[in-house]
Amino acid sequence: MFTFVRRSAAAVLISVALIVPALAQDWREQYPELTIGISSGENETDAIARNEPYADYLSRELGVPVKIVRGTDYAAVIEAMRSGHVQIASVGPAAYALARKIMGEAIAPVAITLDGDGNRGYYSVIAVRADSRYQSLEDIKGQSFAFADPNSTSGYAVPSYYLSTELGTNADEYFSDVAFSGGHEQSVIGLVNGTFEAVATHWRNETAGNIQTMEKKGLIEKGAVRIIWTSPVIPNTPVMILTGLPQELQDEFKTALMAFPTKDPEGFAAYTRGESSGYVEAKHEDYLDVIAITEHNAEDRRRNAAN
Image (tube, rainbow, N blue to C red; front, side, top):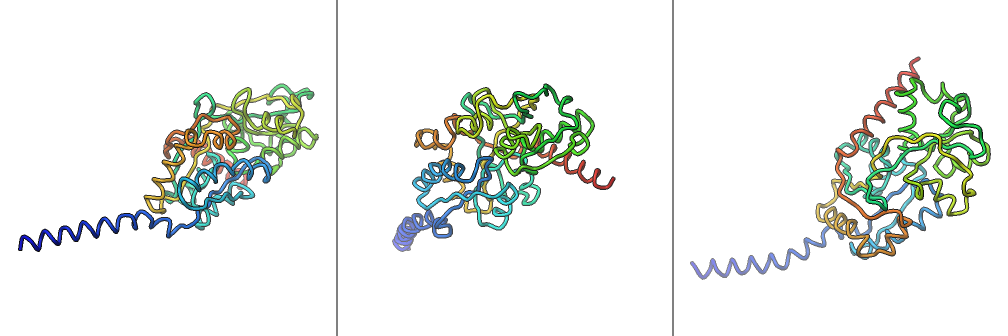
């Protein structure tokens, strides 16, 4: 009897040893390719090119091809996640709030980027042409204005919230004409070209932000625009993942993501334009204030529509 038990135990150990490597590969059999969704304020060509080092690094680390797809807007990326066509995504905080509203705990933030100084946040700004007479929000009352995207944090949610809570109004009442430009670059180009008198976009510090990036790329002349309003700090964009994915996949992705700055510093610098020092772990609670802002804005829209 004892001998039989010992042989059985040995057989079990051998079987487990053979099975464990197979189990470790299970998620790759189920997901032979991973897709990451992005929605960037950049034009599509630049956005895809900038994300290539990110996809290449993850492909090497995870052992499956990783491809980047760019949604036409934030809502398109969220819909792609909801349908399962995208497993991982980087979208703004307000878009995360929308995704959480639609998908609940089927998604979760994995990490948040740090800027070059180790800060976890950025800002919404309202900009005007540098040669204009406008110096404050009061000065642009009754002028034409552009938001970036309805699901953009800095390009819509935060400035809308400020208009409502601090000025007691809304964009349609405050400005003569309000448009959604389709993206942050489009907003600033429209501003410089005279289509809009003021626009909302994102800004990080004196050297980093949408305006500075556009200057570096030659899309606008340096000093062509001027900031007249800056919001309180906004938590940085989260990297979010479908929580229904195999846990091994989630764990390996998180490990690879956190190691990106040290394992592939050149790729990481290209991906982040040299404006980030790395990642820290993110949690849903980091975005509760942004969620409250988006809910406030939605209630404002419902109330205004009813009136």
